[in-house]
Image: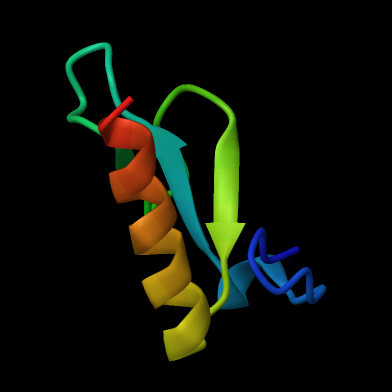
Length: 63
């Protein structure tokens, strides 16, 4: 399910992101292979959802 629009899609149609840290970057890091450790957030391919997700990740970094 997309964490922004809440639509249920096949896993292949979603892009997984994990929270950075542990040497894998800052903020939310894309995980196209689905192998990075940690709980994932999934975002669909709609441009609006991707943009909102990026804004959300930027806001979380500032805290």
